[in-house]
Image (cartoon, rainbow, N blue to C red; front, side, top):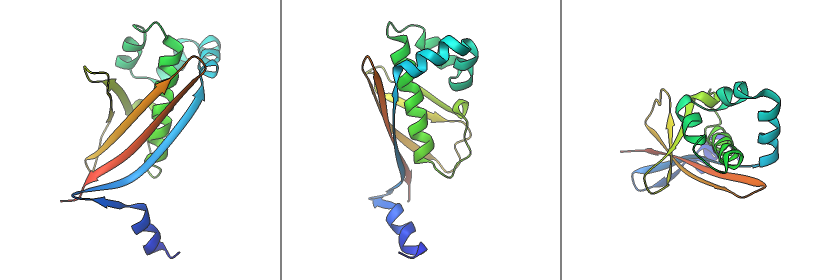
Length: 135
């Protein structure tokens, strides 16, 4: 497949929206718990914004919540494979109904990210789809 065809295949058009990329990630919750035990607050401050840390501390399922956020950020990295982002460039919050929202620092090009996060006792998984208006 030549490069032109590959780019067309990569970027799907849906009305006035184009899918730029998608990503998925899964992580074992114990890996997050072990990193927190080993590195403590330094680990949290490397992967979460201050706002995300404050929100996470409110959850009874703290390790699962952190694992979900970690998986979500990894899914965003995969969906935006050509972007130079750090964990702190991505902030995940929730709407009042619980729907996760992803914000990118310095979001050039007006990309929107559709995000889904799920976690249970042992695993967290997330999916990210990056879309952009094509007007």
